[in-house]
Structures are given as C-alpha cells and as structure tokens.
Length: 516
Image (cartoon, rainbow, N blue to C red):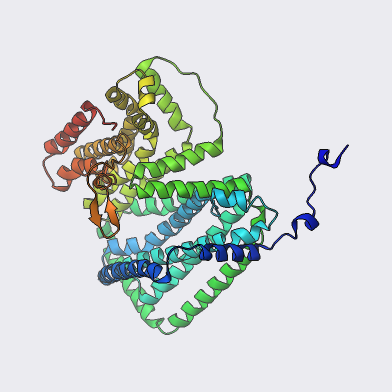
C-alpha cells in the first residue's frame, strides 16, 4: 500500500511549528491595519461624535437621577420606607437571573462563523483565541451592571457612598455570573443546571415582591416606619466617617475576587465546543440585523429560532378536528412545548401586585398592561410566521383575516386568565377588561404586522439616511395598548373604559392584515 492510501499525519517539518495564539492575533491585527481604507482622523470623527453624544445624554440623565435621588431621600412616608427596604431584595436576584439567561442565550463566549472556520478549527490553542472575547464580555457586563446598580440605588434615595458601594457589589456579582456561565457553557448539563439556578433566582425575586404587595394598611404602621427611618438617618450620619474606607475595602476585595476567578476560568476556555461558540456568534449577528431594522418581533424570533435549533426535535402529538379547531389545538400544544415561557408569564404577575403594594395605585393598570404584553407576546410566534409567509398562509386553506382570529384564540384566553389573576391588584372590573383588551390587541397587532418597508424617499438624520417605514416598527402594538388604556388613565366612566377597548378589538380583528 502506498503512502497516499494511509492516514494523513501532521508533520511539523512539512508545515512548520504551530504558532501561538498571541502571535496569530498579532499577525491578524497587522494585516487588518495594512489593508485599512480609513485614516485615523476619519475614525476619530466618528468616535468623537459618539463620545460627545454619550456625554450629553449622560449629563442630562445624571441631572435627572440626581434630582430624583434628592426627592427620594426627603421622602419619609411608609410607602417610601417599605419600597427602600424591599426593593434591593427584589432587584439583586432579578438582575442575576436576567444576566444568567441572557449570557447563556448568546454563549457567553462567542465567535463568528468565519472565525470558527478559519481559526477555531486549527491546532492553535483555543483558549488564547477566545480570551479577548471573554474579557470583552466581562468588561461590558461590569460596566453595564455598575451603571444600572448605581441608577437604581440613586433612585432609592441612598447617599453617594452607599450608591457607589452598592454599584460595586452588584457589578462584582454580575461578573461572577459571567464566570459561572462560561463554566456552564463547557457542557450541556452545566447549562441546564445554570438555567434552573436562574429560575430559582427569579423565584427568589418573587417572594419579596409578594411580601411588598401583601403589606397591611400603611396607616397602621406609619409612625413606626418614620421612627425607623429617622434612626436609620442618624446611623448613616454617625457612620459617615469610615464610609470612604469601607468603600475602598469593598472595591479592593471585589477586584481581587473577580480577577482571580477570571484568571482561573480563562485557562479553561479550550474546553468550549466550537459549535456552541459559533452558535453564539450567529445569534449576535441575527440580533444586530433585527436591531438595525428596528423590528422588536424579529429579536424574539432570532432567540426562539436558536432555542429550537439547539433542542433539535420534540415529541409529536396527533391532532384532532379540522380547519379552525385543529389550528387552535396545535397552537395550544405549541405553547406547552416551551413551558419556561409560562413560568416567566406567571412570574410577571407580581408586577401589578408590587406596584399596588408600593402605594402607586394610579400606575397599576399601566404596569399590569405592559407586564401582560410581555407575557402574552411570545405565544404569538405562530401567527407572526404565518403573516410573514404568504405561501404558508395559502397552504393553511383559510383567509389571513380568519387565520389571525383563529390563531389568537389561545393567547387571548391566556390574556384573559392573566388579567383575571391580576384583578385584585387592579381593583376594577372595567379596568381589568381594558388591560386584557389592550394586551391581546397590542400583541396581535405586533405579531401580524407586515415587514418594514424601504420604499419612498429617505429621511435625513444625524445617523444618516433612514427609510421612513422603520420609524413605525417599534410603536406597533404599543399604540393599541396605550389606546385601550387611555380611558383608564383619563379616569373616564366605566362605560367608556369598556367600550373603547371593545371597539379596538372589533376593528382590528375585522380588518385583513397587510402582507406587503
């Protein structure tokens, strides 16, 4: 047998020594700079514009946050005391749960398909190639977590040192969450257990929310709460001296712990599978394309598509009935195939109860409507697929208007059930009907909306020429939601509160959706 018939063996004398990841990245950086078609000053103009915009927005937002912080610090009512006491116990597990789920959805360490084909398939050390992406994710989460925590703590009326200390601790916890997701990305079993941990954190955020919502009458404990707040202010004034040292120690310990965990985890990046890394890059590319078109529904479609591709297959069930009845049954089974959405929808019920428990009765219908919209909208993916595919709509054998009515039956019943469970917090039967009508009408409108149109003249903007059809994309669905809530917000009689949402539902389901 000749040598050509045998297996191919890698011989360094024929191909040369395997380069290190650092030398390979340096060579790629030099090659890119050599073929760059933009000068330094052209890049500096774009960077300067971005930095100037961020500075202006940051100054304006910082002034607003500082004003709200001073107002919250002067509030000594029972509502402010309970909200300040329970809100950190709600937000910390909620931020951790959101971080874990979002990072596991994209990787968190990801690479493009080109990088996965040309670099990760080579015998070069994979840990060194993925380390820059890992550091970028950690840095981004640390900065975003610090800003979000600082804003939240400032809105609760905390002092400047307490705001910085809370922001540092939350940022360190989120960085630890990043490290945990990188560890979980290495095997499918770890990813499943990490997702379950995120669900437990979400449940942990629900418990103090229910406690806040089910508080007794505020007038009974107002004097006690004022005394507690006064004692707390005195303690803060007495501890004003060592607060700077405490902040420094907290920051130093957080940095040491995070850097140590990052160093340990960065050495295990070579255990990441190439398929999971490339899948995250494809998801980011799809999200970037959906964000560029300002299509909110497409963002959910990209995430749902990746979920079903990773799942691979499901257990099929035999359908029953014909035409509309069969479609309703299949929609019901399709929703049950992703039970985590139902869990999240149930967890969103605490939003109206928390707002009602905090004493903001005026904002309860708005909070319930937006929370219900987030809970119901993922259940209409089938309707969106049919409305975006003319061939699939013809294959169903029904008119598109009838299909929209039939495929909205199950989500509509779920919206009615969700609003009924939120009725004790809303407190009015007519307002509950308006919330349910606004949720189902807004969700169906957004799911059945036609794709963005690029026809017509372009509109000049600081970001360049933009098609006018893109501006209406983010508002679709929310416009009907606000329209149904308008009589509630304007404190109109119950007859108008029921009549306006009923009229909106009648008109929307009687009009055939546009497909082009």
